[in-house]
Structures are given as C-alpha cells and as structure tokens.
Amino acid sequence: MSAIAWTVGRYVVETLAANGIDTVFGIPGVHNIELYRGLEFARLRHVLVRHEQNAGFAADGYARVSGCAAAAFVISGPGVTNALTAIAQAYSDSVPLLVIASSPVRASLGKGWGVLHELDDQRAIAAGVAGLARSARGAQDVRDHLRAAFATLHAARARPAYLEIPLDLLGEPTTLRPERFARSGAAPPASPAALAAAQALLAEAQRPLIIAGGGARRAGGALRKLVEALDGYLVTTVAGKGAVAESHPASLGASLPFAPTQELVAAADVVVAAGTELSETDVYTTTRLAMSGRLVRLDVDDQKLSDQFAADVLVRGDAGASLEMLAGASRVRSGWRTAAGAAAAYRARIDAQFDSDTRTRLAAVRALREALPSDGVLFTDMTQIAYLGNYAFAAERPGLWFHPSGYGALGYALPAAIGAKIAQPARAVVALAGDFGVQFTLQELMTAVELDLGLPVVVWNNGALGQIRDDMRAAGITPIGVVARNPDFVALAGACGAAGVRVHEAAALAEALRAALARPGPTLVEAVAEDFQAP
Ligand SMILES: Cc1ncc(C[n+]2csc(CCOP(=O)(O)OP(=O)(O)O)c2C)c(N)n1
Ligand SMILES: [Mg+2]
Image (cartoon, rainbow, N blue to C red; front, side, top):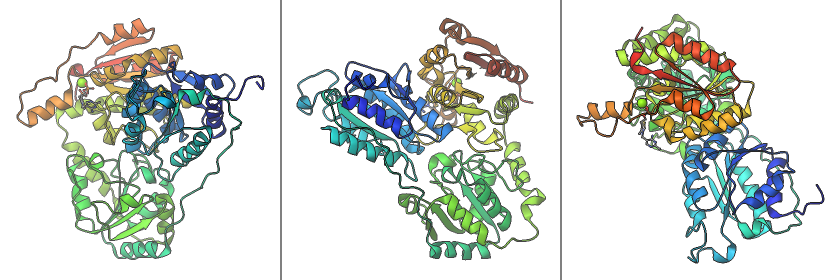
C-alpha cells in the first residue's frame, strides 16, 4: 500500500473514508480515473450505475435509509449535468449527498478552448442546485473544500455538497494525508425565552394541533408526550411520516392534503409546526394552508422561521430538542379528547371521500403493507399509487416510506431503492413506481441484477401518465401526450436477468411481493391497474 504514491485523487478517496463514507456510486471516465486509483486501497465500496443521475439518487436512498452521507463520483461536463436533478432532489429534501466531479485541466478553465467535456462555468451550474459548490485549484483547496463539504453534509439541516477537481490536479502528488474533520455537534438549544413564549400559548390553547415534518422525524417520543399532554391532534408531512405510530389515537397521519385535516388546521387556536417547511409539496391541493389561530414554529433553519408563514413565536433550534422541552414543561390535561377516537373519525371522513379509482389503489397499498415485514422500506416515485400511499400506507415508525417530495423528480424510486438496499441489505426494501416513471431509470435494473440485490420493483401499470391525464381532464383540456406505449415489462425483466411477474389483483400482489422478497435477485412485479378491484 505504501508503495503507491499519494496523489490528490487518492487523498480525496481516503479522506472520504476517514470521514465515514463507505459507499460511492459512480461512473468513471477518462477525466476522473485518478479518483479510482485510491479506491483499490481505501475502505470504500464503489457501485457502478448506469447514469449519473442515478448515482445521485442511489446515494440519496443510501443516506435517507441509513442516516449516513453517501457519495457520487462523476466526470466533468455531462457527468455533472446528468447529476444535477439528483442534487436538486437531495437539496429539497435535506439529504446529505456528496458529489465529487472532475473538471478539465486548470489551464483551460473558462477559456473556451473546446476541450473535452467543457462547460463555461461548471461550478456555477452545480451551485444552482447544491447547498455548497466548490472548485479546487490546488491540493490545499481540496482539503479546505472537503472540510466545508462535510460541514454541509453534517449540518443540523443537511444539504448536498459538490466539489470539482481539475483532472491534472487529481493526478498530482501530494504530501497531504487524510484526516477526520472535527464536527460541530448538535444544534444549540433554543432560547428559554422563545420556549417560554411557546409554552404560554400552549397553556391557554383549547384546540392545539401539531404538524411534524422531517425535522421532527426522530423526535417521536417527545412528539407523543406533547400531543398527549396537550390533548391535541398530530398530523405529519410525508417527510415526518411515522414519527409517532399512525395508529396512535391522536394521529391524523400524513393527511395534510385532505380537507378534513385542513379544516382542523384552520380551526386550531394554536398550531405548532415542528421541523416542517409547510411547503406546497407538504400540503398539496392547496398552495397555502389556511390558519386562524396562533402559529409556533420550531426549526433549525432561520430562513424557514421567516418565510411566508409568519409565526407568532419563533423557536430556533433542533425541533426534537425543543419538543422535548415543551413536552417536559406542559401540564398534562385530563379528559384526553383524542383518546375518544376523534382522530379516527376524521380519518374515516377522509377515507369516505375516496372515489372508486382511489379505493382500487387503496387495496394495492394495503396489499403492499400486508406483504412487507414491519420494518420493510418503500422507495416511491411520482405515481398515483404513491400519492395515495403518502397518506394511506400505515407507518408505525419513521423511515419506512420515502418519496421524492420536494423536487418531485420522476425516476427516483428504483435507483434510490438500490442505494437503500446496499446500505441495509438485511432489510426488506421495495421500489414502487408508475409505468411511465419507471422507464426514466429502468436501466438500473441491470445494476440490481449485477449486484444480486433481492429487490422487488413494483410497477403500478395504469397504461398512462395517469395523474397528468386526470389533471388535464379536470382542467377541461383534451388529454394529449398522456398515453405511452409500454414495453412488456415482464419480458424486459427477463432480458435483464431479473425475475418478472404480472399480477391483476391485490392478494396476488401481496403474494408476489412476498415471493420476490424471498428471492436473491431483483423481481419486477407488474400490477395491471385496470384489473384491480375496489374492495
Ligand atoms: C423529471 C420529471 N419529468 C416530468 C414530471 C411530470 N410528471 C409527474 S407524474 C408524471 C407521469 C407519471 O406517469 P406514471 O409513472 O405512469 O404514474 P401515474 O401517474 O400513471 O401513476 C409526469 C410526466 C416529473 N415529475 N419529473
Ligand atoms: Mg401510469
């Protein structure tokens, strides 16, 4: 090992390993081969994917399921532009994704010589989507930028980081040696004055309601204590789904898009928004939640505390720690209203509004739930069955249901599920996509076959860009461009060396999923939507 020279490329790889990254998803090219020199020696696994976007999605899935940052290696130019969508997705959902790119040689940068993979300003393009985007000119820069990149990944609100290194610099010898960068630790606690102001509002509240987002995902214990003490309701965003078991009598689940919940939010006299943006993609069907009561926001992110939802009390700090303080300080009220089943009654109102198409999808969502072990994980795409599952998939704990909520990038599910399965091979992991969206990234089936990943890929085949068709109809637009010819998915799976099975009803879907989970390699399970029945 000591026989090989220390180049900047090797330094990068070893520094990633020294800072806790154990998996990198990538595609090598002539510009970044110097990154691969170090891979032979570092304790770092490289996974070859079929497109750079999917390197980013896979690293995102790895990070979401494990809580540990993962990396993508891409080449200059097209490797970077291909990865942009995944970086933007990771940004919008606060995922710690590290992208290491090459760039053309330093002497050529910004000069328009027409060198291979040239972009006028590659860093600026990445800066438009990443939390941090840096470009190195020397070995010391690489170290300083990597330190800043890890700070971005490990920040209280994680964001993706991007570092580009010119190919001539990657190959240079260096005296630098890898180090583990110091970490800043947890966010400082919220100010006692802000917490006291929140407490005062809550003490007087008659109809309190808590909205918990991704920032409160790991604070289930405190959330539960607070909601029970306050005798209030709890609703989560998709990112906060399962923070408290959705079967809890105070839980309205991830039901913000539905009218009965929006009415409760509008009527609450105090709303506590914990670790949530309250963004359009959290609430849908409305661009902005209506509220008539006082608003308390708990967030680590200053920007969020001062956005379009002007709050009466701003509590800056880790949402979980703030919830813990509020729960500890709240006097427990008697006659706990939600125990009487009021939340269940609201949920029944939501379910009663479902039309027969939605009830058909509900049968499929329930089949998936039934077939998965209690800690089974789903990575979902932009498809009608996932929009329903965001609410209807019963999550008894956090971290079971993942959706590309913020950026809404079609094609996310399969590569992200591959990343998650690699992170946690012993766990049941499933990809769930629509017939059109799955084709954005279906080439990654080969990655799953190659790695022999026991990964079921469920394709909800309604023979259309279903949601868009329905939206066109609702808007009085004659549907155009919403029916695409599909491949024979089962035959295609076979051609890739995966198993394939077609199912026509919910019980068969559950059965196929169980069989797929028991099999070593990937299985594509095509669910023919038009044959499914509403129960
Ligand atoms: C990259 C990208 N392009 C386009 C869209 C817009 N879009 C959202 S859903 C959708 C159709 C998806 O069809 P399918 O996967 O079959 O799901 P369905 O709605 O039929 O369940 C499209 C085109 C998007 N979200 N992302
Ligand atoms: Mg479809």
